[in-house]
Image 1 (cartoon, rainbow, N blue to C red):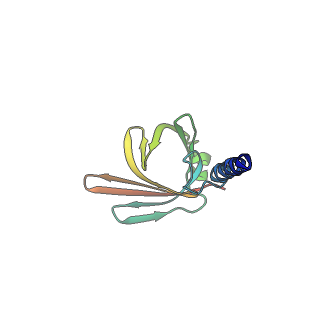
Image 2 (image 1 turned 60 degrees about the vertical axis):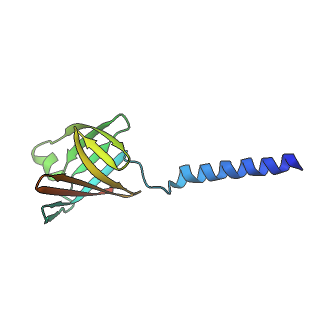
Length: 126
């Protein structure tokens, strides 16, 4: 009887861990492709259309590629590389620290720099 009780508990723990890994209920990971959809700079809002939206790719090795927008690619071939680290709601991007609100499919980066406040809103690319 004791053996069955412990087997059931172990199976329950394995099922809970598997569900957490599969469904990621505590928010997303930063790695992957993100689309910059809106920038708010000191209250001025800029919303990007599909031709203007930049693609930011975060890799697990701590590098981020800004592939630019489709327009950038056509006219300038933009492809910037940056270093980043993410921990506890903060994103350091080339040494600049942003407050980072990260969920499964949305990311908001906020930078308060003296009198300037900049907010970047991104959507995970599907």
